[in-house]
Image 1: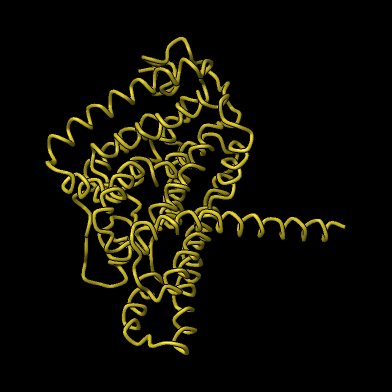
Image 2: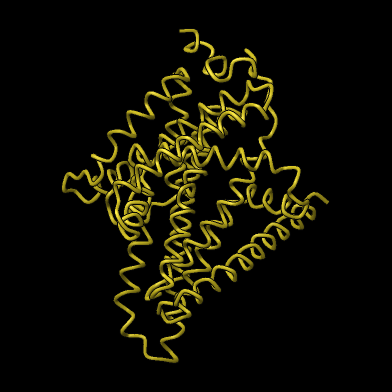
Length: 382
């Protein structure tokens, strides 16, 4: 049972391409690329979720892209966050502060989104009849104000990772806990005690409330598996052989999942409903498949590094570094656009144009903000 003491890197498939000590401790660029690509997927999905109603036949194109994007999606961010704890030099105190800060960001982002949603209503009512939209705007604003999304999710998981590091949890236990949590968590969705405050907290942990887009327990296994993957990766001496092995294993897992999901869910709509539901409430099969997708994407990007142009490399690395800003800004932009469109839906091509425009504007705003901060820092230093 030596793997319990030395981690998984010396066992099985990885024998001969790993060392006892940490040797691969540099930046793992493939995961930075993954996070950068993740942002484009989120921009696309949110453009349609905020304004995409009544798309008609074109809805099939969106649903197909949605199913492909959500086979990685938020699971990339949480997986990489878990992996990053094996590479970060942050202490437990720093992890706790970061976790609380992320939770705080959630509510700051919520306030900003509510402002972006309501501001157009306050302006447009002076020029046109808006009373028919008032009830929908107020309802959406209440929901957004207490919304639990990726920042809350990441912050809560970071606090759990800090606690487990504090008690020196063995690496193999993360695998066992991840599998157990993933197996039982779907049955705990919607847990309620009938009290508004406690139910809100339970929704954040278990999911199932209107306020909870993502929930901590449903996504915690991704962080655990990312941590274990990071523990192995740090000891890898031959990344090419390592990724060749894990990519082959991931392809096998995804092939099994594909056969299973197509046999169990007959028809496009049934498949879409399953993929949509298990994106935010992943069952056992979906979690394993998404984890395989994340690893396969990282492996593909590792092998493609030499073919990626300097411009694309810089853009993906920049997005990865500032991904929190991109996430907040694009939400504000989309809700502001919804309001300026008098809270009316757009068709497929309107949403696609919004995705392109949102990508350009979000990137420009983030870069401008960072430029202003850089200029201010230079001025203060002088």
